[in-house]
Length: 121
Length: 109
Image (cartoon, rainbow over all chains, first blue to last red):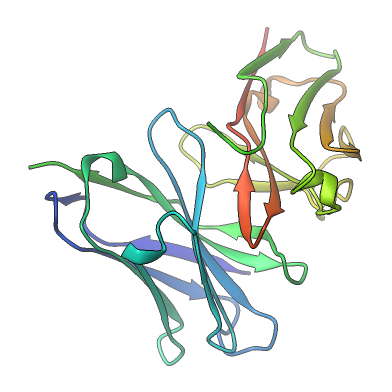
């Protein structure tokens, strides 16, 4: 049974850096073909893909946010970490991590419950 | 504005059939990339409903079906049930990044 769970702060101030952790179970981040993505959804707005990391440590980022994002993994803890710098109120959103399946490009067969992050002073 | 366009809402009575469209372009759906569909009930994690345009994961009722043609795709739900009331999202791929539709709220009357 694959599960993912997001954790991190619920409130960050403008200009601060957000760090979110996705704790994965039911699969190994080091298994060939595995990928985990971060996706967000601002209130009342569309979902937006942010970044993905693959089993071989290959990484891809949303072109519009690339300069602010870093995705890493810790295979010993089976966790994926996303950092986003220079947070702004427009970054207020529910942030999801999701397991990629079906080969590249993935679809996302398992999702976490999401973590609501509010950016406000 | 989403790269993939969905109607904001659709509705239907129990037992009816509804369809939700997902319109893209030549750089995503029209380029041959697959379309996938997700269902999200209030307060729950998104659930994969259709993958690879028309395939259902294990456990998804055959009341749900997907299709793709040209630069568009559709999700059809037959025999509508109250439990189908949810938000539905399409997803594809475009120029090295993943793209989503804006979501469609299905109301069961």
